[in-house]
Image (cartoon, rainbow, N blue to C red; front, side, top):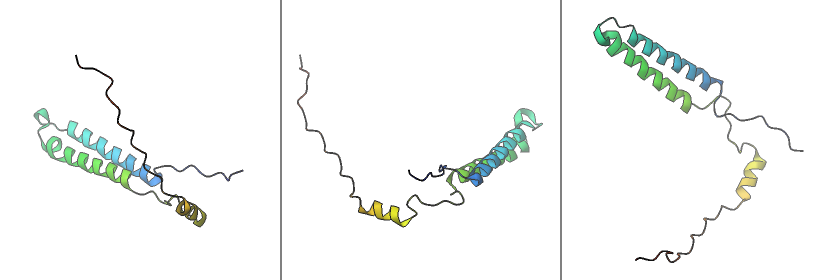
Length: 107
């Protein structure tokens, strides 16, 4: 039997924490824009502070997606896997199909 391996997830706990932090900052930005007491939200909160919080929230979300999780290890971490991958020949490119004559006739 093969030894069981833990499932590998794309994101770690750090990534999820950053995502939730980014969502909280985004929510704070939207709430800040709605709290503006000026007409049509044209005060400082609606035009300046709210959008700045939204930009910061989206940057945190981007960072959360792109950050490498803690304990990340490449797939070929052990020596036997690296040797096995090195011994395999590179896959050949598929051959192009031969051109055929068109099956329709012009009137």
